[in-house]
View 1 (cartoon, helix red, strand yellow):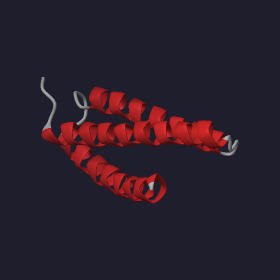
View 2: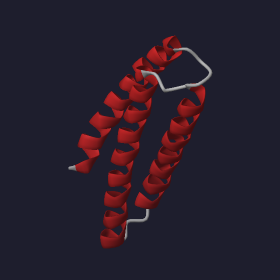
View 3: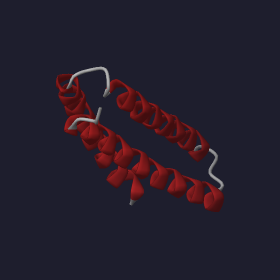
Length: 96
């Protein structure tokens, strides 16, 4: 059985989010090392939790794709698109 287009779109969206998180985490680590500001450590940890959530969602969506119909994937895609829009706005606000 092959993955449906909506499941692939969900996985791609979460993969893009994970990639942006990796970029942010790298930026936070550089800032932490150069400034020594200890509060950034909490932001790094928070970002790592989001990265773990994205990675587990990719795995779960891949597993669900073979069991659940594409109608569920459409609803999840809508939810993920809203979450990605919020994350991208946060990314551009914090990455400057």
